[in-house]
Length: 57
Image (cartoon, rainbow, N blue to C red; front, side):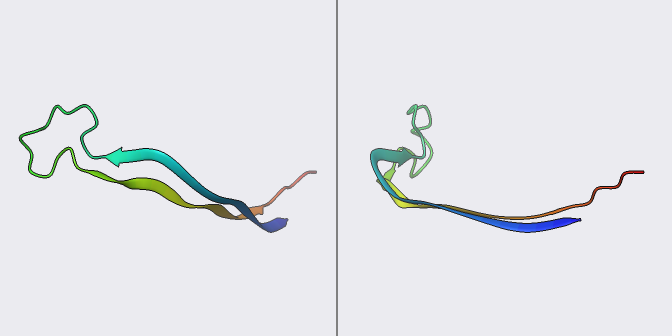
């Protein structure tokens, strides 16, 4: 039996790309569509917990 935990911290990031809720501009009749948010930025990290069971005879 194996039990484990992994953590990955890949650092901070910042990009000039923007998030848009209607990138192709096809839904202009929907209120609020076409709005863009601030550039993406944040921290890249992940957690993983795992368990494994092996049996041989």
